[in-house]
Length: 168
Image (cartoon, rainbow, N blue to C red; front, side):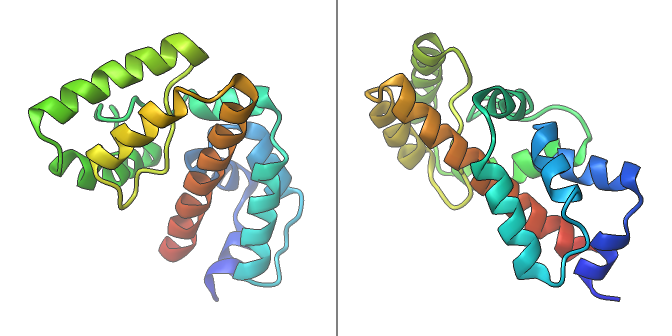
């Protein structure tokens, strides 16, 4: 049985757990679960992408609740925490003390300005690149930043869903 067929056959409880590990916004997972069965990987990923684009701001905030600050190590032994550590590991290895300190300050300024953690699709980015993005995004207005955050959350969820499928 292929990954998508296995995904389609997952019991509700396991499916919910897998999807919440990808994105802590229950509405995202519910939208995907409601569309099972999927004919193929592309169909599943398209549904996941559409679900991410359709999240309300309250749903996005729920999704953000599970993300640590950039540069901070995710705690716990959950799948989501492990993925977060992996996603940020390359960036952590490329940072010097000055960049790390500047990122802490950028996180603080961002949270003060927008009221939530700075979220970025960190995979493949250095901390210097992440810092530059944080500083740039501090200039966004609320509406523009909400759109960026929603897109970043969607990208992270899609990457994690790919990991779920690869593990099935």
